[in-house]
Structures are given as structure tokens and as C-alpha cells.
Length: 268
Length: 271
Image 1 (tube, rainbow over the protein chains, first blue to last red):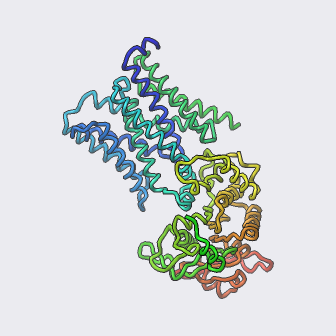
Image 2 (cartoon, rainbow over the protein chains, first blue to last red; image 1 turned 135 degrees about the vertical axis):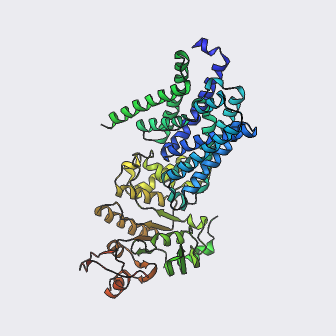
Image 3 (cartoon, rainbow over the protein chains, first blue to last red; image 1 turned 180 degrees about the vertical axis):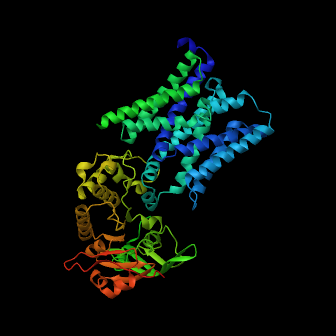
């Protein structure tokens, strides 16, 4: 462990892992509460389109991905509120459209290398100081926003109808949260990649919900579970020389199944 | 932000809710046609009508969440908006959809204070005490620390009432209050409403397709099937010719009073 930490890339990976775990765990609480898991999958895949557009136009891919994923997240929400379009239908359409745009852009640009593989499957060991600065800045802003709007976000998740009648800006808060969700996903792509990032968006909150039944405890447990999975998965993957993103997701899933069993036992 | 003293004194005589010739359409069909409706202070107004008869639309119009195509609507003597809605307590239909939602009973009641607290503020001891005293009023103080989702339908309804009352409303609006609540709990619930009316001068508007409940517990009854077919006291509503004129085919008439007038299905063309 000590010798691993002597490497700069390992230090960066751990710092990024710790910061993102906290952000993902807090956002995960609301994702599970509002049943946004599949929206998360859709947004993550649409980030691929953003990365590809960014590469083609020479814009930093992470910036392009944030803008593109943010637009797609809000478009999914807007379209699914129209008559005759279910939210799953909206996600199905936008997620494949975004991927298709991505594939076309990749074909037009000359980025067809390990970079792309890193975006799809994660490359936590390639996190630079610049990446760390982005994660710290945006991650901090996300945590602050959730802290400030916590009671409002909880109310609209619990009872949107009553929240609306009592004067809450429900539509604004919905779009606000989806934008936060999109940013969280994009800055987390380096850990697990586009394909697996939604796991970390769902599992910590879902596992914590199995054990505890009050929101304050669920959020704390969610953070602990995310930290354990990310740091543990990173260390294990380095010793065994296997893919780190996938190891993190497998470890998180094991924690989920243990939590599920604990929850079942406690109810009896 | 608050309603002025002049307006306050005017409220003593003017109706709290006043709809004059209100028309609403969806997709080129009239859902509400020429609605005149009033509700005064200290009055329980029951709005009864078949499903699809425009009850939910009427509530949205009263709350200012939907602007009518024509006609005028006032709530506390002014156009319904965020400010006038602050004096309204709203009770949604009971839904037992998410039993695992991670909030305690007292957290739910405190949600009723959010709009008065404003953004970015946190809970203080005073907010919790206000919530606990409302739970006491509805007889749910012993359940304050329990998870909301594990309560029965009747208990959840009491907690929702406490949430509505914690912001000290003048008017309660109830959407289908009998859904998911057994008859014993229903009786207790309507006794509670009558007590709140008598003690606090609270007004109540409740919409329901359950005619028995409305005619038994309301001071005034309005029969709504796109139009108001009757607006008056409950006994007048029980006249057979009025019921014949108004009832839709999906409406089951169950009037259980001393005479148990009828339990039967009726038919009527909607337009």
C-alpha cells in the first residue's frame, strides 16, 4: 500500500476517487429516491456523444460532454412530460440518438485510440492534476447546491403535487437536479467509464436504503459505501492487475448484496 | 407578502373562494362550463361528481395552477397566486405507493413549513415544536418518530392534515379524502374537520365521487359534472329530480342516512 502511494498517478487516483465517491453517494440518494436510475444510464451514454463532438470540434471533451449531457438530461425530462411519451421511451430515444451522433463524430475525427477506450471503460490511473481541479471545483459546487436545496429536493421527491401547491418551483428544481446529475456523471466518467458510471450512481444509495430508513443515516451510509468500494476497488485492482473501474463496480455490488441480506434479516 | 388588514376585514363577509362564470377547455372540449361557486369562512363545501366531471380541474383553477379560458376566480379576495396559496392547506389523495420513503412522521409535518421558511434555511427547534403540536392536535403525537410509510391510510391522512395545519391556513382543500381510508378512520377524520371548523373557523373544500360522505359531512354541496347542477345545502340535493338531472353513469349513489334513500346506478348524457 505504502509503495503504491509513492506513485503520483496513484495519489491522483485516490484523491479523485475519494472526492467523487462523496459526490456520487449524495446524488445517489436522490437518484434512488426519485427512481432516476435509468435516466442516469441514458445521460451517461449521451456523454459519449458529447466527448465525440468535443474531439471533432477541438473543444475539451469534458466540457463538451457536460453541455451535451446536460441538454440531453433536460430534454428527456421535458419530452417525457408531454402526453403519450413515457419517460422510458424518451430515454430510449435520446440515449441512442446521442450514441449515434457520437459514432458519426468519431468516424469524422481521427480520435480512434486508447482515449476512447478510457472514456468508455474508465481510466482512473490516468487522472491528471487538471482533472483533479475540475473534479474538486464542480464536485464542490454540486455538494453545496444539494446542501442548500436539500429540503426542497426532498419535498418534491416525496410529494410533488403538494410541493407545487405550497409554492415550490417544482419544474425549476427538477431541471436543476437533472443538470447536477449530468455534471456528476460526466466528471465521474474517468473512474468507471461511460458504461459503468451509472452503477456508482445507483448502488451506494440503494445499498444504504436497505439498511436504514431515515434520510440522514442513508446519506452517511451511502458515502461510506461509496468510499469503501472506490478505494477498496482501486487498491485490489492494482494488486491483482485487473481493470480498476470494473473492480470498483463489482465490490460495490457485493456491498449491495450484503446490505440487502442485512435489511432482510432486520425485518424478521 | 401578507394580506392587508382591510382585506382581512373584507374576508369576514366576502367569500374566501369565488368563481364567476368560469370556463375551461382541454383539447377543444369544455371540461368546466359556466361555473359559479363560492365558499365562505367556516364552511365545509363538498363538491361531488363523477370521474371525469371536472373535479380536479376545478381544484387547479381555485388554486391558480390553471388559468381558465374565461371567467373570474378569486381566492381570499385576490387572484389566486403563490401569496394567496400560502393560506391554503392542500391534502392530496392518499397514496401508499412508496412505503419505504425515508422520512419520519415529524419530517412530513415540517414539510408544511418549507414555503414559509424560504430557500437555504435549515430547521430549528421551533419548527419541530410547531410540527409536534399539530401532531398532537390530530392525535398522532405518539407516532412522531415513526417512518411515515408504515402508517395506515387513516393515520397518514391525519399526518397530512397536520402538515396542512402547521402553516396555519384559513382554507383546507381535500382531494378525494375517503380514498384508501377505512370507514371508522373516515368518521374520525370528518369529526376532526368539523372540530377544526368550529374551533378555528377553518373553511374546507373537499371533492369526492362518494356522495354519501359529502352529503353527511358537508355544510354546502355542489354537484359538478362539467357544470354545477346544484349548489346548496345537502338536504336539497337529496331531492330526486335534482339527482336525476345530474348523475353520470359511473356514479354509484349511496346515501346512508336515517332513511337510506337509495343505493343504485343512474344514467345521464354528459353533454
